[in-house]
Length: 226
Ligand code: GDP
Image 1 (cartoon, helix red, strand yellow):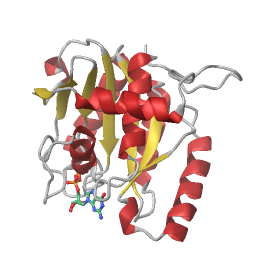
Image 2 (image 1 turned 30 degrees about the vertical axis):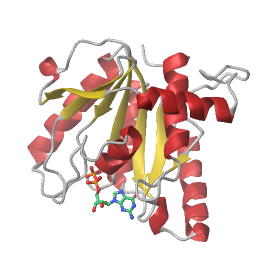
Image 3 (image 1 turned 120 degrees about the horizontal axis):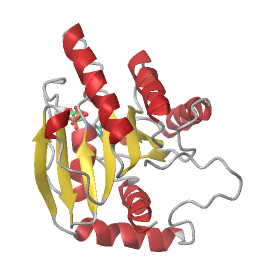
Image 4 (image 1 turned 90 degrees about the vertical axis):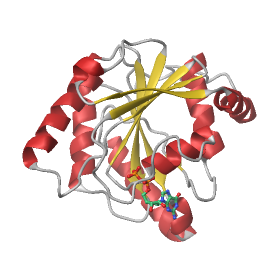
């Protein structure tokens, strides 16, 4: 079963006994491993059988998900950086050194997608989230430059219902001035508090400058080791 947001006082986070430097080193080692594309699933029946720890990346089309995955894995083109949002409606599975499965979920909220496609996609996403025993966490990406959209809140509610812990990740931090970034982070933290399955620790990243990438690798390493 997916782990839930730590809500009981004293409930230990995986890897909580490690200090920041240890976590960053563990993350570096984890991501030094080979990252191998495993499978692209268009339908739930095609999703590979659960094995090992899995972490999924979700976000609106154009949020910077491909760029973040590429920055994390140090590959230029692991996940395709798209010039045309909304084209990829599939789950891509990447195996990281046999220790962690990274799942690139389809981007949502693209206006040109037809209503029925959106519904199908939502259904598949929910079934995957609810029924995936190895899924430890979803990283829900939010663009630091723009306001949180109704589609983001809808996905947060979906994740709450599926009872999968999710962690909010601000992307494109380089494109926002520090004061505005601070305000954005505070706003998103307030939003997270309203959602039962949201993890309280928000992450701030930039695929462009590399900010927050080592820390995010550390968070993922803690999930693998926890
Ligand atoms: P995806 O649709 O979520 O996979 O988003 P992409 O990774 O394809 O990125 C969408 C757009 O945002 C592209 O034009 C990227 O160059 C840009 N982008 C992605 N990450 C960053 C970042 O960290 N900083 C800045 N300034 N732009 C970014």
